[in-house]
Image 1: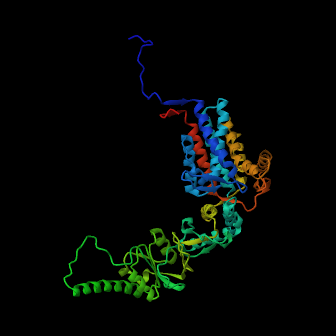
Image 2: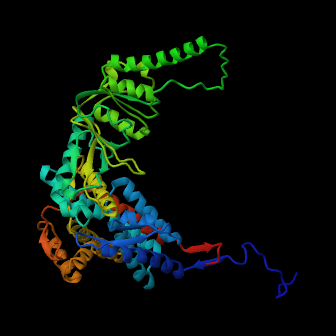
Image 3: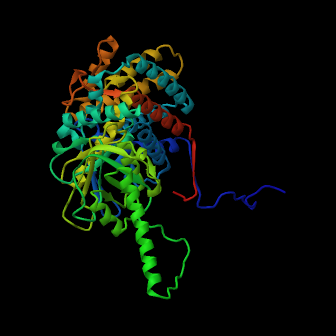
Length: 522
């Protein structure tokens, strides 16, 4: 058959499918990365500004936390989704450094775009970036130092700077370090997950305090329940504090009043057995995850025993961990060895409203593996931002207690950039251009700190570059945007390393894409 214009076309894809190839692909990817970079750059550093997020449900949030901002964005572009995934990975792994990661990744792609326009092959850039990552890692390993108490406190303060908690920086830093040291002492590992947050809803930030125990909100059902129980032994029950209901529907036919009295007496005796089991165990308080029968509640109150119900599973678990109790499933199984102990359990009655207002405190625990930070402040939005900052600081400080630390304020990024430049001298091919671009991308961190602090980014970067070349002590960017010898600004080594690896791998993954096929036609 001869070939001509009348030959039928072979349709593989729908007509509305759009295929983008060549430099157009890289330009779109880099544009998406640049949007993220420009969005987060003003929030970076101790002088970073906040963003107001207006959500689809009408609520608002004010924050400069990179993880929060990225999580709230309704991202559609596939390249932007890759960066969102990168941010989520950084937050999950380290709890800090999301904005740094996004800025580095964006700068790597912007630098790559300049080289792509000059005809450099994407795989050449990939090779150069891979070599640069190795050189940067080696420099970070060389600059890492073992932390002492002062550096651990500095890590906590560094993660809090620029956040809502900065107005009480020293106060919160002391609380965070003490909380993690308490968890480390009794749990063997300084896990940030073992530090709970509790919003007081009153006072100021400086009214915040550490409770070596557990604080939670529940409605206390009787006003005459015992309060301020000292040296109390506490039982934790995962279930209801009442007679177990039948699993099947049963219909009882009572023919005379004696049978009815017998039935009521049997039910009362069963409730007495439940109460007696708690009394015999020696418990002065019982916490349960289910309902509490009113008769049992009154009986326990008469015996001077505090009973709190309707706790969720996480609250029961945290309470048990703080007092050293074992969670039991039946009151009849409670033994003295199952009980935990605290110095004081108390409850504070609040004005009744639609929400639970009573505050129950379990404090003065002997060996708590769970502790609570009570956070003062009446503003809901402001308190939420403080809690986000505290979570970041807890994660960073817990990592610093288990590994080495690196100087912050852009100093380590300037030194890694110089290490990449020194390593590029050994390269004779075009990979050297990619390595030089990688070094410039790393310098985005001190440049952004200088810009947000009111300094000149170019001058500060040149000063840091000269300092790194001389091999002198780490020089970073002060809050005022000036070059200074880094003092009291430290990061866990894993935060820097994971940030660098995530940013580089994401940038490399985007550079390997040479064609985008859109079934939506956009």
